[in-house]
Length: 104
Image (cartoon, rainbow, N blue to C red; front, top):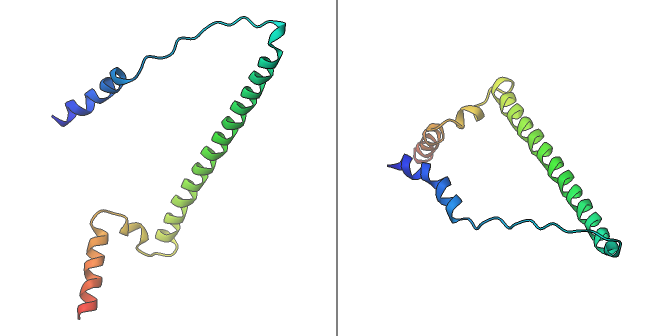
């Protein structure tokens, strides 16, 4: 039952989305110099945001790699339980032991 709901979600979203606007063809004349300048500014803005997107994507990638390397360093060099504590069920077991230590 769950699979049917998940499988039908993309179809439902597609049907619920509004239709795409139609593109119009425009003839540019010499009188359109101001609008051409606005178009160049729009292209510059688009290029700027593409560059920002690229820099942020690479930054996140580098941070993810550094994060993974730090986790491996904790496991192999420091030999502490940081990496093991990320496994399911480990935090609760260590938390319950800590609670037992406080009560005794």
